[in-house]
Length: 428
Ligand SMILES: Nc1ncnc2c1ncn2[C@@H]1O[C@H](COP(=O)(O)OP(=O)(O)OP(=O)(O)O)[C@@H](O)[C@H]1O
Ligand SMILES: [Mg+2]
Image (tube, rainbow, N blue to C red):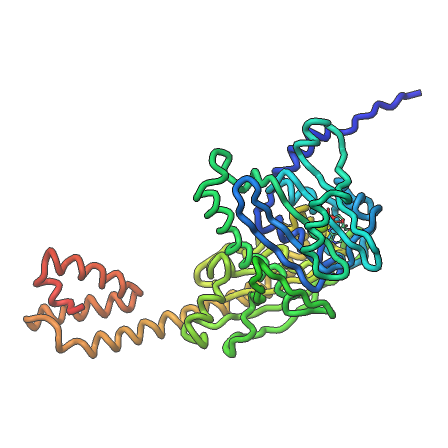
């Protein structure tokens, strides 16, 4: 008979390698917010507190909380549980891997609905490193737990605290000004990310509306499709069905053509519509898995990013029943489109891009015409000699028509110092 050999993983080694599975700071926090939403929270408060080596990042939610057996399972790498359709969790890893990507210590304090006493567990990488065992500490009776519980101002919910922020603090001088700026600077990018990734939940969807605060600032939703602008064109919804593992699943595509700069109601609105990664990178497909964004922009291999199609954005929605077909990764920040779907999307995406391209070109033409009008209006004031003035006007018109008017302005500025008589003819 063949004998079996146990090859259980080394806790020390595996936890260390799990630190590098590709989370950014903001995607790690988003993974915690996923858990809060899955637990039915309506409020999530995140705090980033700089205190040198003792700096902390915490998240408090008013979700359903956990009892003892649940919190034990929550701390396990690969939590044993089943998921309902539409639940945001999938791997049983996020809480731990997201934490370890940024910090060495995870403290969880939870008060379940209807429970009288809280439960608390702590996962500490230094402890695992010493023992090489898959163990967490029961910290329910510790003073820290009572303190954490005070932060929880609801009848039930969960407090998550990250300590030993070795991946966020500089090793050499964690107390210094640079460290402070680094920690305090984290919130800006985080705010933009969460406002985007959870915009549907912040707006409220399917009976769930979530308030998210970062350092007491309530986040506004960022709608990638700028539906609040009158000139945004809603090109409607298309539905597709794909087959995976003998099952069919539905996918929705909703296409939008965004307004050109001059059609926005204000400069501020135009700036905010650009999004965290700015106009060019934010064109493309926004992929929603159970209403949470898992990809924000880019064309998912269907075409490449191009300045001329930056006004094209569309929503692509799939349910958790298609997770395997979409190959969602642990950090929930990358999916790959099934080949079958890519083919189906090519035509509607190309059509959208043709419209976006035309809108872009119309806008450039309009801008050029306006500058040409200005050029001609200015003509009599130019140059000292008739021929110089004519050449100046010709150059200016050509610059405007090729979209180089600003470049010509810069050239004239240099000429003003070096060849003022030529600059005079340009009259800029
Ligand atoms: N804030 C929370 N409130 C209540 N329960 C939570 C909370 N955070 C985690 N849990 C519980 O802990 C479990 C493990 O969380 P974890 O994020 O590690 O995995 P997951 O959410 O199940 O899957 P994924 O790896 O896809 O995120 C969850 O399934 C949930 O039961
Ligand atoms: Mg999770």
